Image 1 (tube, rainbow, N blue to C red):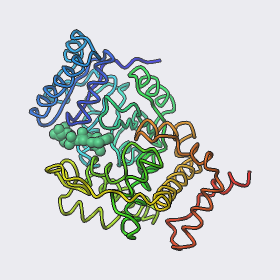
Image 2 (image 1 turned 120 degrees about the vertical axis):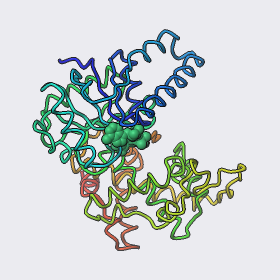
Image 3 (image 1 turned 60 degrees about the vertical axis):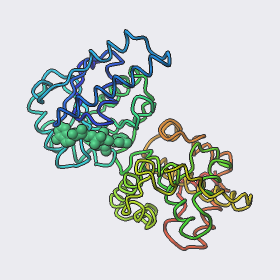
Image 4 (image 1 turned 180 degrees about the vertical axis):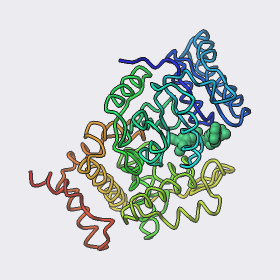
Length: 383
Ligand code: NAI
């Protein structure tokens, strides 16, 4: 098995520095490049603060902080990465800019160097196509904050050699991560399966069935989710979450199942992005208390059941379409977005026939393709 000791990271934003921290903690030598040198310097300063907090909490020794920092070197050009074994790109989410940087780096590094992207929404296969040797290209998708979230999605391009998936899988285990393998399709695993958590909640709100606080309360109280959909969208940022939804929708050739919501677009347009702008679905200035949620048990159950049925349907459909195997789908949702249980197992617990009935009854009401039941879900019932 080949060793990956010299790691190049391109982009020193929140993801780049997080990945640099993970690799250097695992004793790799990391070269960090950002087109804006000030961003790299700033990122190292932030990392120093993070490491000091870890020392205070007794999670690492001061000597580990020193070694993590000394393992990372800021470089001023891509030429300095010529001896890298693996390069992970975490720059702006723009296909043309990413392709330009990859064709540039390919002319600098050795033939054995693996080239990887941390993109969350661009096709890995399309990025690989800009290379002379696309076999060495792969998606390695970390979650934010990368040092804390255990899940990493490995996404081979159509052109990637089989061995590489296994090698990156092993590497990520040595980096203390929980890797899963996903097919190169829009949203990979997590950003595809999680869509109904947001979109069905928004739909329930738009249909005036319940307000934000009640929907959030239902998902936490009955479903055991750590955060409700609106709290989570405020945390992620409505601009970011809307952009992901829109890009997944377009990439699925406008499949109504992934249709974005006007409400979220308006919140995003208004600059009500959530916590980072002090206002989203909730107000974060002066600690204004949100409306108290309704305690109507029947309503809370109705909200939870509608959203969970849509999530289970999405997870089973991902299995049906071979986006990932069952174990990885379950791991992805529990380790990538902290769901209290794996969704397929949740379906088994509630019974697959219950899920089919729920989705079919929604279809009966709306006659929209959005509420189509996965063929695999029906098959599971008849088995
Ligand atoms: P960011 O905006 O925090 O950082 C991007 C950095 O890349 C900036 O410092 C910028 O100066 C640098 N940069 C831009 N163009 C460059 C170029 N041509 N050459 C060198 N450096 C360049 O972005 P963030 O959030 O770290 O995201 C980076 C990538 O990771 C994106 O592809 C994003 O989709 C993906 N991602 C983001 C997650 C998130 O929650 N923020 C989660 C998982 C993946």
